[in-house]
Image (tube, rainbow, N blue to C red; front, side):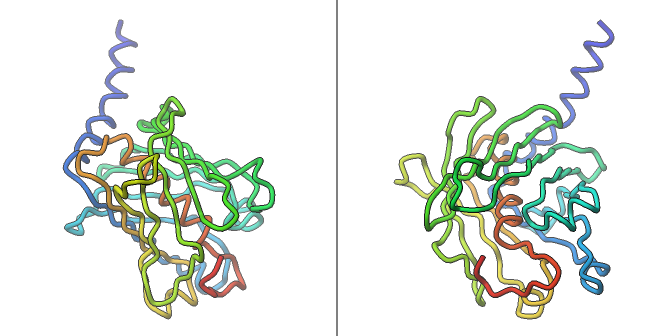
Amino acid sequence: RLLIREHTHQLRIPLNILQQDSQIDQLLIHQQIELLEVLTGFETNNKYEIKNSLGQRIYFAAEDTDCCTRNCCGPSRPFTMRILDNMGREVITLERPLRCTSCCFPCCLQEIEIQAPPGIPVGYVTQTWHPCLPRFTVQNERREDVLKITGPCVVCSCCADIDFEIKSLDDKYVVGKISKQWSGLVREMFTDVDNFGIQFPLDLDVKMKAVMLGACFLIDFMFFEMTRGEQRSGVW
């Protein structure tokens, strides 16, 4: 009985924290600049601050990937992203497996699993093959399709934001968006530091809000992360 009580308490803490997101309809994700990476080009673990619409930090995200994987696999690398609250507790875990990155082979497309609390899946974001458009399907914990995400034909970062629309399954309604925000010429050309904004309905299930975070990080790595020697041409 004691073990059951302890296990229930461990699960309840992260879920209560997620429940606070019920009054949030926008998230801002700011990647931190790593000086070692800027000066040497040596790929380090990515770190992000996640803020609400008032600019208050509510989460901190840190990539957990070994050195060899980061520098050999580049942006296509598998990773574990740990999302912590302001008390340092891990409330969300993102798991991206190693998958094929070529659009010519749609048999093994990109995917990310969202766990909240860690170890318990609440949803998935899977890439949908399309010859021209970046497309993703948002699924719940039972692998049932819930929403779609569609990006622009040319993912070009040229002095403007890039929007990935969150749509209903029938494509009739746009219910939100994930925006890669223009960070300025210097940052765009010489670093892979990115800023994102996520907008979704206020009444969206808190689990799906966590899944939107996973979608944002998957989009970042697929289209906006760069390796040493690469310069941003704006098209990926």
